[in-house]
Length: 69
Image 1 (spheres, rainbow, N blue to C red):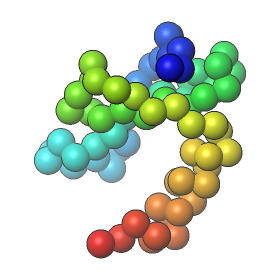
Image 2: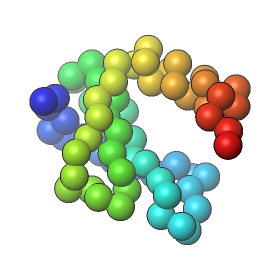
Image 3: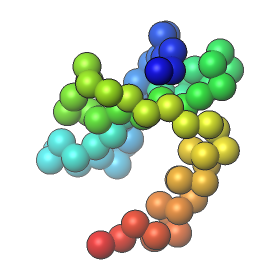
Image 4: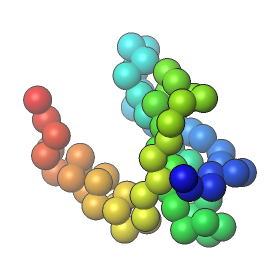
C-alpha cells in the first residue's frame, strides 16, 4: 500500500456531470515520488499510485487517442 497522506485531490476541468471521473493527487510527487489516482465517485475507496513517468506516459496515450472507444 502506498502512503498518500497529505494528498490534495483534484478533478479535471474537463470532467462532465455524469460522474465518470477520476481524481488525481500530484502534489505528493515531491514527498513520496508518486502520483495518486482514485475514482471520484468512491473517494474513500481504493487508490492507485504510479510513478511520475508512468503518469506522463498514460496522459500521453490519452492525448494520442489510444483509449478511444
